[in-house]
Amino acid sequence: MSFGPPPSVYTQSALAADQARSRGRMKVVGAVAALVVAVLCVGGWLLLSAGDDAPADGKAAAASQRPDEIRETVEKIPSTPEGRLVIEHSEDGLAKNTTDPRYAPGTWATGKIFAKGIARKVVGYKIQSQSEKAAWTLELGGHICATSRHVTADGRTAVVVQPSKPEGSKTAGVCNEVVFFDLDTGKKLWQAKMPSANQAYVTNTNLTLTRGVVAVAWRHGSVAYDMKNGKQLWDSTAVSNCEDEGFAGGRALLALVSCGEAPDTKYEVQKLDPRTGRADWTYKVAGGIQAVYMPSSDPPVLAVAAGDITVTDLITLDDKGKHLATVSLAGNRYDPGCGQRYFAAPYFGVMENCDKMVVGRKQMYVATKEGFDAAQPANWIVAFDVRTGKTAGKFDGRSFQSVLPLRMSGDELLIYRRTFGSVGPAAVVRWNPRTDKESPFLLFHLPEDEESELSDPEQSDIIVEKDRVFFAKRELTADDKHPKDPVLAAIGVGSAGVSH
Image (cartoon, rainbow, N blue to C red):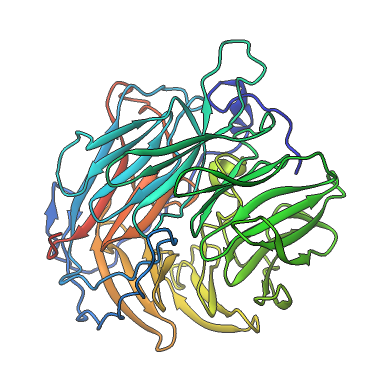
């Protein structure tokens, strides 16, 4: 997993590998059963439909968090699951050639603002304003190289930037600046230059946040900053046979350490003190592993690929770094979605991105691969006990309506269920794994010609925050038939009965 200096992803040559990857996405076409369904649409396509079940009582709000802790929100129950449009943003002036897309890494939301990273800037839109005009624009001075899904309790996050350099510069493709900013205001709080980062590129730079600390690793070095003022806390940039490959943040800080060169790379996972960088414990990953992802830092969960780049096992550890359980994903049944963004190219940070699994305090939830048998659910979400690795429940999709775990909301799992034509609306539902009860959260339809891409976690970010769900594409190209028309980049749905 050693990365040499690649061409910038913002040039044609860096995207040559993408051309070899299939961009096709299967679309399910089936006969609609004899069923009469009344629908009410907003703007011609957004469904306002209520479920038959009354919303269940919600959980108590999460314990009060300090401003610099990583946000863990518990969603309130909307007064109605009927969906309505709260954000719709389109981009224009796009290249028609799919080998030269406008990259849009990073999607965040607060109670007031939906924010999107697009090329060399982050743009914030006021939710429910029904205006295409941005509330704020943060110009970064260079292309975004890495993002994190993590946001502090008071609404701050960070990106790594590839600053502009003179043509022909030896460091023109280097990603060596961190920008920390406020999502509600768009204000840049601080910017710092990463030390000895001349080998940090968009293909190997990983960014994360944990309480009070922003941490970046780029295989050949790492650095951590104090959120409060951008002061460097520690770094690891000395030449060594073992290097920090990447970090996982959130409640704790884990480091993936790689030793040696492929194909003989050995991996270790360390829990670090975020303020000092010192290791509290070290777990040695077995030999023969080709890739390691860290979808959760607390509880520590590793997704490993044995013998290939496809994840074959999930490994859980206790709070001392001791092995608890191994869950085998062999048999081509499960699909945790690790490293699948950008058609498996390692762009913008991959360490924590397993987009088809979610880890809770006691259980982890993994989607199965999709099937197309009309007599069976399209797929399932299977719960595994973190301590034992044993199955602990199953959530069924529906025929031609696959399901995707999104995130925890307290002790409940938020799940996205895809639409099926004009009959089965898309939905975000809440699942209580203890009682096996499903409750509607939001019901809606996405634009028919955009649904396939927006609903695909390999192509789009799907996030739930403050009773709303947002879909945002990661790559933008012009429409083949109408290249001058704006292209839908992001959409947000909230409850028709909730006013914030």
